[in-house]
Length: 143
Image 1 (cartoon, rainbow, N blue to C red):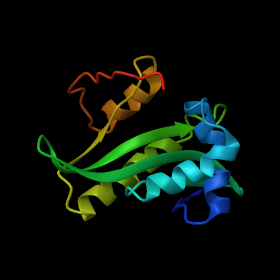
Image 2: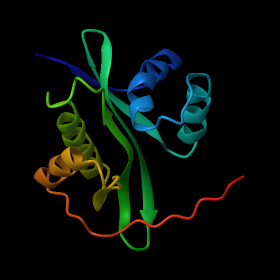
Image 3: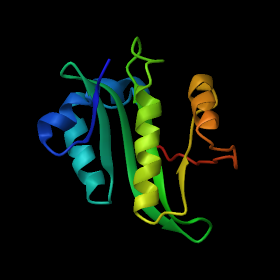
């Protein structure tokens, strides 16, 4: 079955991605989602989406960044597919697009973090040539 891949631009396109994002990021609320995305867009964040039969099935939030450790990279903040729509090649197609996009923009690589429990996602990343290269540590503040 065919689908199209696009970068969201309009408020309606961004809002159409919320159901997919909410599965990966359940703390997000629909009424705050658009404003949050627009703030992140000021920091180079973009949303790449897969649409099939008029509905968004899979999303990837990404940004360009530069680090002393890795040089210029494309960083994938979010990658998710609607439950019930997995194993149809949507996330793999998004990864392929992002890898090509990073190469076209002179990046030294593509990076992402992934939760320990996301085994099927890890299998996809490894099949696309990613390697497990570090542990990610965080310290949350209760504000």
